[in-house]
Image 1 (cartoon, one colour):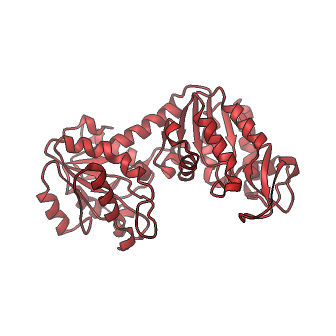
Image 2 (cartoon, rainbow, N blue to C red):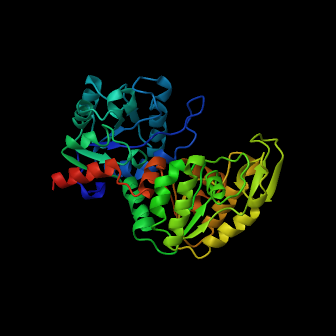
Image 3 (cartoon, rainbow, N blue to C red):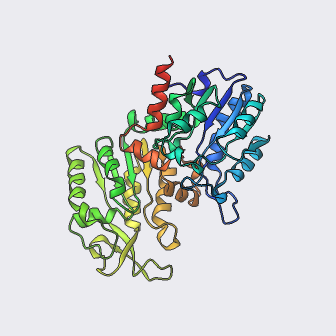
Length: 398
């Protein structure tokens, strides 16, 4: 696979696929522009090479129809401010107006296509739609890691019809850090896996257990493992159909010599209401009518000690319902522990990066991935469709 800095862009039309699926508030103001900022190195490089830069992305889930609230106009406005130059947003991403605007684009200038998902053909990976997009470019650059686990027209189908294709700097950074974490890690390698459900992380757990030296389990999913060990977990979130699989994963950990850490105490409450009474109890003493919603102080100490000698840490999923103050201490304490470690720390998964932000530790992590689903699929040991498409495209043109 080729990267943007290995390609000749001078004076050429360069079509860049980014993931600008940013959160908007009720007034359509951008709440977090991290994904836009992450694209700046690729855009600036292309502009410095005097390329004609055409930008495309999706936003939200408009389900193949035009939904004005999901227009990329706020993104174009923010990007203009960050670049210090005008980024014109077009009224569509295909059609005569787009073809004309691209034809009139001057070197060193930028235009943005409207939301790709306003057309159902995008998510269907339609060849006709992909061919139309490919017609706007001399060089195609995919820098949308957050969408790399999808097989869509703008990141997979298009590679069959472009003259040259490669990956941008964000994609390169994501894959480089992932390789450092799981393909050639400095050891001990520790995985922290949290979040609500085991079912969403089963494949990742099955793959990681063969790679890591230590596995730390927190969040709602920990209660499925605790119940599998015979503990009473009250009304905590449990997937009863996965108890046997949880036992198998713990057995696999023993077989691979992996140290497997589960909570030893937790914060429980009568309900998830903010004003509900809470208690800190050992896992052996969870009330049959209460819910476990965070890890306790003894678990924080245990998990922190497990990280002490780590050289590489991969973290996906919070330790509790961190959105509520009463159940945020475990996640925030672990964020501080990871930040203060001497390890290469790689964080991925939508909720985890929000938690890191709230803990004030964003700048103290080695790398925070921009892709939730894509990051998880890499943890599962899968090849991402967009990466495979770029590799095939590059091989076919060398």
